[in-house]
Amino acid sequence: MLYAPRIVVRCAVQALQRKKMAQNILPVSFSDVEAAAKRLQGKAFKTPVLTSATFDKQTNARVFFKCENFQRTGSFKFRGACNALMQLSEREKQRGVLTFSSGNHAQAIALAGKLLGIPATVVMPSDAPKVKQEATHGYGAEIILYDRSEVVREEFTARIAQERNLTIVPPYDDARVIAGQGTAASELIAEIGELDLLLVCCGGGGLLSGCAIAAKTLSPNCKVIGVEPEQADDAARSFRTKTLQTVTNPDTIADGARTPSLGKLTFPLVLHYADDIVTVSEEAIRQTNVF
Image (cartoon, rainbow, N blue to C red):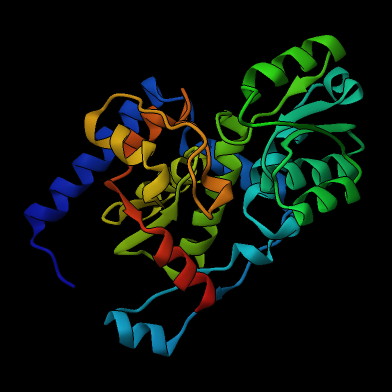
């Protein structure tokens, strides 16, 4: 597609303005994503990008799937977890780390800790999928269960961390985690080229933030859209009102998106880099899983 010179210049100016503002204000920049990519070489997998002629026909578009289900531990979470643990001080590594997660970040921290020789403890809700609990334990982490209807996990985790002198590595609201997640998008664009649209699932906003940073840097004209369950629409409401919204124990099949809100770091990043956040119904999620 060809653009008039005036439009090209305006897009370039906007990109420069965005970069300058990010450097001055925001907690994560593209240089952090680049550093994470170098750090993760030989640790995280370069996941495949697949296509579907059937899906392209249905959507009347050329669609690329970045298959993070083929990442270590089965999700993108390993990128952020490993990037965070690799940057700990030697004393922090010796003492060990603590996190809270319903499963994907739990497994990521557990495996990253095993590979790096760092003891890992994970606070998990008692109703977390058994397969994720077993996988987390299998990677060598200690699991502490709690009742999500009675306990605020962040407060519970903070108390344990103080008692045991452990370093907390949260699942999304951490600059090192965000930068690591952004490597998924930087890999995708490096392989495919510039994109018109990037759809990113959203829970606490770590993946959305990191990928939006990468996309807006490498493919400035790309629109970045976050996607979350209707039953857990705190991010969509936050994006529209520009005020942080919360949700309590949302009833959604997407257990990884049951986060109470965007984080102190991810919220401003999402506002700055994302173009929109949309929601999907539980029925649509079920149909997609079947498809």
